[in-house]
Image (tube, rainbow, N blue to C red; front, side, top):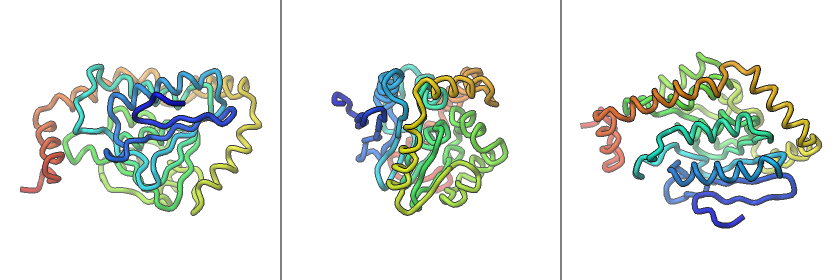
Length: 248
């Protein structure tokens, strides 16, 4: 499908492949990316049984693009995007190669299945700048549990793909992740669209925490930390000079 500026979208029968395509910006998230991903997923509701989300071989997604103007409608649409991945009437598969940081981990945590190669690594760097991953946390806690999400947030350090597998953040890993992905798709495509829709709806009603109920709390927390001038100053300094807040 053409017409997108930040993603590449193609349909292969009942599978939709969405590739984050902002290579000069490390596949970071801006308002256009959120809008286009939401549009692509809307097109998948009736036509796709499986949605495969990927980045580049080196970078899956490095989180928010802080060089871009803040989205005028706040973090709500991004939360809604992850909610669609988690609860929409299709199986969502994140294919992770290279780095996934901050909001990139949100995409991973919101997916039904996560497949990775041996270069994949995962981190939440927000606290280094006075922020915290408010919108990521409901999805991450749902996938790996409170304490592991808490630890990943507090340490701000990347974890390897083997650690991510142990924690349940990654479901399957292999040196040839494309082959691994194809094997999964062969099996998943045997499930009917009706069965997927019913199952995903059921799972969204019994999941803890309930992702839809937590949206208002997550968005409010995100807006609070992103309205702190000290946090914004530290972030602007890093974007301009590459210096962390503790570096003089």
